[in-house]
Image 1 (tube, helix red, strand yellow):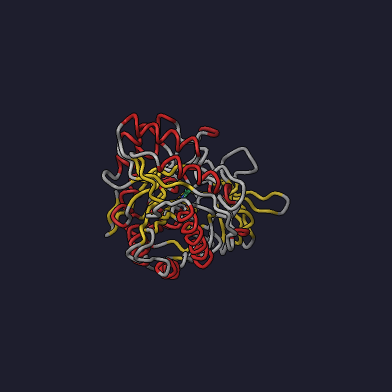
Image 2 (image 1 turned 120 degrees about the vertical axis):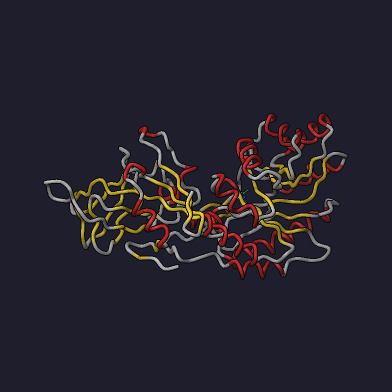
Length: 409
Ligand SMILES: *Cc1c(COP(=O)(O)O)cnc(C)c1O
């Protein structure tokens, strides 16, 4: 694919030239490479055994263009609110949706059931009661998975950036509660308990995640047998690692797919996974320009247009967002051009808070000067959509989609 490496990130030529030619008034800008995303998602699907179902977790990035690019390569989508449910249904009509998340409102559940949601992930005992009552009241059949917080030690979870299971959490249910839900739902003719769902940690490598899936399946088999549940499906969640310190690294999908394949049994449950970040992270870029460069007590700061109110990922995860500097020649002013050269640079945004840091003390080959552009990589997931965009009332970014063959929309 080619590209240049200035700073830490390798920027594909198509993105680089697009970022270079964007008019200044369109900055900051999010640029999404939809053809790259399509290829990436297709490769993930191809690495999975045919019996393993792939869902995309929409909360990673629910942009309609992204949902449509991913849709042909996934079985369905995981949504976590009534808002996502309505939005994804409209963006990719007809795709199966699994609706999970704690704290679903009665109105959200009613709408999901009345509109024939593909799967409901039940997260509490009260929710099981409510789903049963709604199925009776509406006369609709509902297919559910119970979200479990199983008593498992997860390999690698101690190092995972986020853990949602294997310890006290508001997500899912402990085994005694699961047992009660299984009994409660087994008496409901309009509720089909298809199996279990667990999303236990985010940021695990392929070996650890595969080992977690194996332990989960063994535990789920035992649980189902003890509760006389026909375990038809097991959703083992998302959480595939994305390494922001190494933008070229990828989760080992072939190894994970092979390990999942070894868990598939003819009489066993359908296995389903629901990654978000590892699908969407790599094909989005946040492009901006350097407004000023300053030095304070020996350290260099580059102040860019925009900031963490557009790209909250580095503030949320505590990393330096990988980036490349696009040098731009010409300085139209009579005064000296602010610059930092041959020294680490901290890239900050326009917000009046010391937390508005996109990358701290990063070595930059060459120089960073006012008027240069900066392209932040790995900005396709948990980026714009998790950002506190109204803080300080700066202008929003513009959005651009590279659709392949030089085309853009
Ligand atoms: C957030 C979430 C996912 C996706 O997690 P990633 O780390 O983005 O892969 C999948 N399932 C559930 C239930 C989630 O909450």
